Length: 102
Image 1 (cartoon, rainbow, N blue to C red):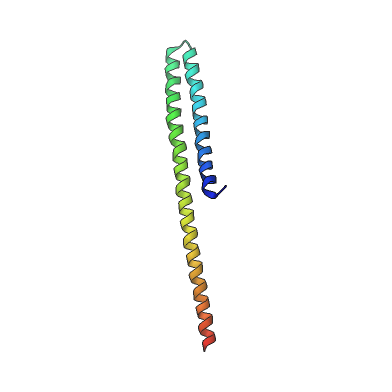
Image 2 (image 1 turned 90 degrees about the vertical axis):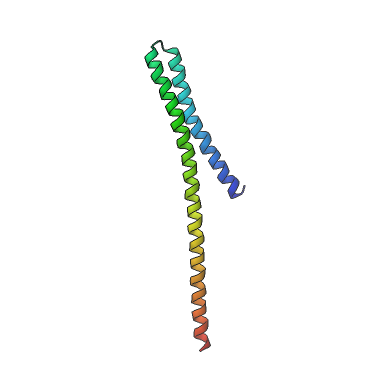
C-alpha cells in the first residue's frame, strides 16, 4: 500500500465516520419524532435532526479539507527545509574546497 492510497483510505474512513456519527442520531431523532404524539416536540426533533445532518456533514467535509491544507503546507515546509540544508552543505563544501586551494 503506497502513501497516496493510505491517505485516501484515511479520508474515506473519516468521511464514513462523520456520516455515521451524524446519520444515526438524526435517524433516531426522526424516528422518535414520528412516534411521539406531541406535534411541537416532533417539530423540534425534526429541526434538530436536520441541523445535525447539515452541520455534521459540512463539519466532516471541512475537517478533511483542513487536513489536506495542513498536509500540503507540511510538504512545502519540508521541501523548503531540504533546499535550505542542501544549499548550506554546498556552501560549507565550497568554503572547505577554497580553503584547501590556498
